[in-house]
Image 1 (spheres, rainbow, N blue to C red):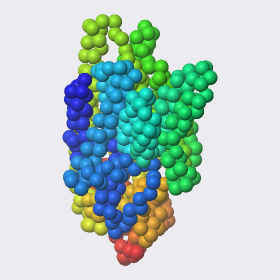
Image 2 (image 1 turned 120 degrees about the vertical axis):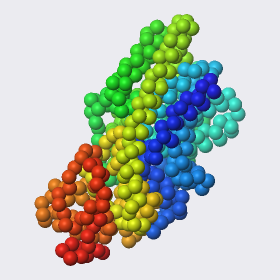
Image 3 (image 1 turned 135 degrees about the vertical axis):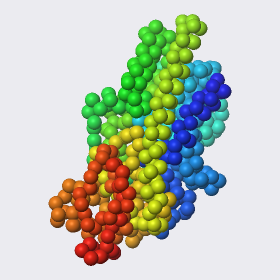
Image 4 (image 1 turned 180 degrees about the vertical axis):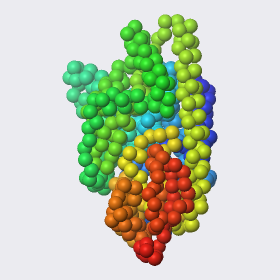
Length: 495
């Protein structure tokens, strides 16, 4: 089983190294931030370490970058995510099922999913830690109390510092695992044991709770958004999203048929210890909004955890060996078909990225680069380019105002002289002013860019920029265009 898992991990890591940059929506922005952290800051950004619940890659990738190029370090971090998810699912299945099986390797089907394509890498790392931690919680159930407390406190801290949603998922899983024995002790009236169980469960979350209460202060800005039942149903398909709708729906249908058929014949054998956790995660997914303040995609992150927990909890008994081999063979074919689709799509996007990056590399060092794009560009595509300009931060030591530097989410901040410069260059407003605004609006937008050297326009579909004398073309692709700003004469003087 171990050999099969290693081989599967190796194959599923191939696309990560086949391209200059994995086409994950937020990944370029994360990679640029990791570069700033690895360098200890820059002319425009400073490092501000704090106990933030979103630090997995921010700690690991800069450490790896001491021994290898940053791009390789970032890709190895993605491999670590895959390994944790596969290993965590298999380990949890081993604990509840009593033996190692090939079945939990079905988790590979969920490695390339919508959450990954959005670039939520810190959460996915934390999800892998949560699965491993849940397995450890059960495995140490009958061991010494101090050992279980020590291990669970460490796991909870790792989940918290990976991503707060990973800690929430871990809490739901462990709470669900405690439901059956707690109910049994309740019926027997063993109150001392009940108090001990409650204390053991709670102890692991005391430090994260203290950090949230006294140090971490999430932004109160934004709004609460509920997507409705339609999008909730659609997001369930995100666990198998991989660019080919036909293959996605086919795999989803076959997955439901497999799980439903086994359950109907009472052969799925879901572990009683994990069943409550599965229901809790499903309930949380249905009830949670998709956006709270600055946190987006809250609910769709749970979908991956839900399906991974179902796989980990199942110990299926097939009617006979031939049936098991047939199902395993079809699963292998579909796993590699999905992988082939991802590889082909990423190789297609690689050509686009190489062209865009060559244009970024042509910018002078220390460039102040504004970014303009519409809200409609914020969507998962084969090769999303919205955050590609942030790589100028690491490749050209540039200032890019769209680099993630939220004080409650990332351990970097803009240095004081550049906070106002960033505030003057909202990407939506720049796009609206220069692409769709009238002459006065365009003039105001150009004046707002007086502190910048260049601007890049990005969209998910081809566009044509209206003529503007204060912008000089530097690079042109249908969806990615760079212009240098002209200063002086009829154009605003540079500030």
